[in-house]
Image 1 (cartoon, rainbow, N blue to C red):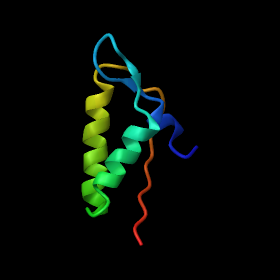
Image 2 (image 1 turned 180 degrees about the vertical axis):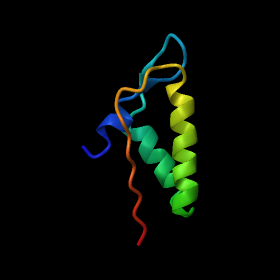
Image 3 (image 1 turned 90 degrees about the horizontal axis):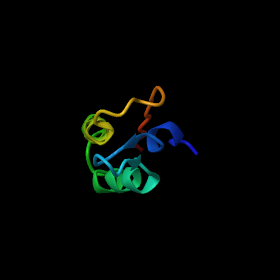
Image 4 (image 1 turned 30 degrees about the horizontal axis):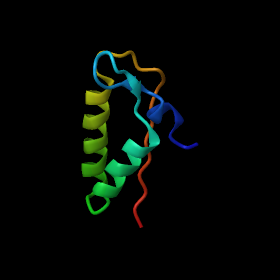
Length: 68
């Protein structure tokens, strides 16, 4: 899986911590497919940081976005 450390990050509401998940990532990418790479990366970073909250980051992250 290409996004393993990204989608495995624990976060979410306090007391209901769970993985970020492939569906969440896929939904964000689909909803923002018409935006620029800079906009998509900003949206992903903001959403991921909010999701992570006070949880410790499990691994380093790198996201590559390719546009045709």
